[in-house]
Amino acid sequence: MDGVRFCHLGSLGHALNRKQTEAIGQVDVLFLPVGPKDLAVHELWKIAENLRAKWIVPVTYRTQKNPNPELRGLDEMELEKRTVRRLEGSEFTFSAETLPSLPAVLILQNP
Picture 1 (cartoon, rainbow, N blue to C red):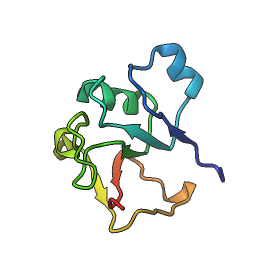
Picture 2 (cartoon, one colour):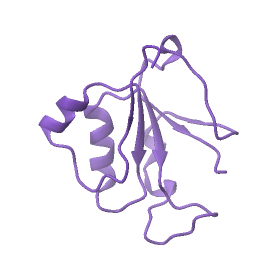
Picture 3 (cartoon, helix red, strand yellow):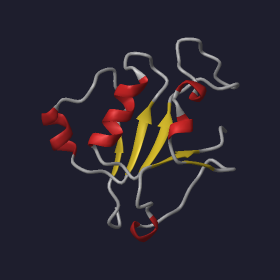
Picture 4 (cartoon, rainbow, N blue to C red):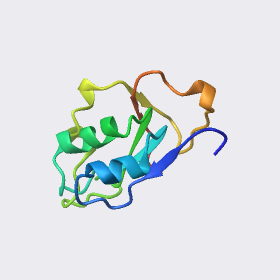
């Protein structure tokens, strides 16, 4: 879309193999399901790294409004090791020209 590649991994419950990673290719914006505990935190970050995502948008995680104990919360995602941008809303706008040069986590405000 307008020179920006998006990828939403749905409810991914397994690591991506090389063939799957190559089929997806490099993405600019990766919607990464971080809540389900099927994958370890380091495996989730490896997926983002292998896809060379510029924006990593965590989805499907435990919040105050969704206190599901089956889901991991963002506090378990080792965000202190990452560049993080927290937004005050639930929408974001950017273009291919404004993508970060280094991978960054984009956290939207919960609705």
